[in-house]
Amino acid sequence: MSAARIGVQIQPQHAAYADIRRTCATLEEMGVDVLFNWDHFYPLNGDPDGAHFECWSMLAAWAEATERVEIGALVTCNSYRNPQLLADMARTVDHISARGGEGRLILGIGSGWFERDYDEYGYEFGSAGGRLNALDRDLPLIKERWGKLNPAPTRQIPVLVGGGGERKTLRIVAEQADIWHGFGDPETIGHKHAVLDEWCARVGRDPSSITRSAGVSPTPGRLPEDVKDYAAGAQALYAVGTRLFTTGLNGPDHDLGPVRDLLAWRDAVNS
Image (cartoon, rainbow, N blue to C red; front, side, top):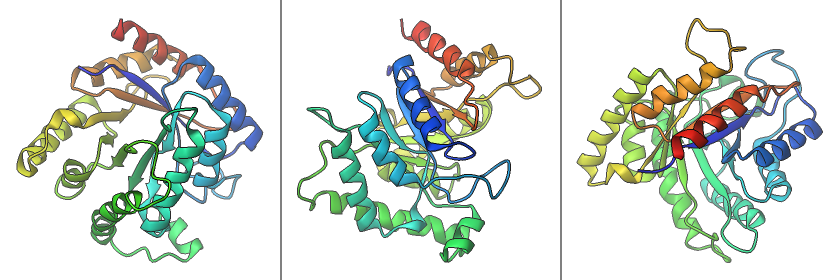
């Protein structure tokens, strides 16, 4: 059975880039397995017009600024870029991140949902179903382009798909993804795992080939200052098959307490 891993999403908002970069370096030194940002153009909480940075420019910078940790978006919005271009961007960041071997990029991707991004940047918002259909259409194009690029990616870039829709999203995961990421309590996540397993059976995919990922937050009703509650939440998700556990850090002050507790829990459960 695969080992537990810890991811941290550094939200690219309400902080100077120098502070974000410093947090990246600290988290890598602490032993975090994956660093994520997100793909939006405006803050998702706090001041809606506060400081915010673009996803893929930041990932390229992280690829240079780090040595070991995997990097990716949680998640890229499929609507914002031509799939052929996105494939090339991902391949390039993959190479930038390589240190004498394989690259460290995870292509986290989803269908998109934040309507303000679409309106302000001139993208057609459409419908949720239409955006999912576009994701289903574009993922094979991304992989096809990877096979044509010179140089090719340094490795088979892992594809992470985020979202919990049981009729479309989890079917797309079963057919095309290496990692599924969801949010919810252990009961909800366990149910989604069962649905994903059913889709894998329908499409002829070994369900154990898909890593199960989930966001970790304090138990409802508990204070976030009680950082040990993050480890309890991770343990409950671990029991239903989750193996990649991600918590978020918001600016301008990045509280590393929950990360330290999750890393200690990871090391104990993997020992």
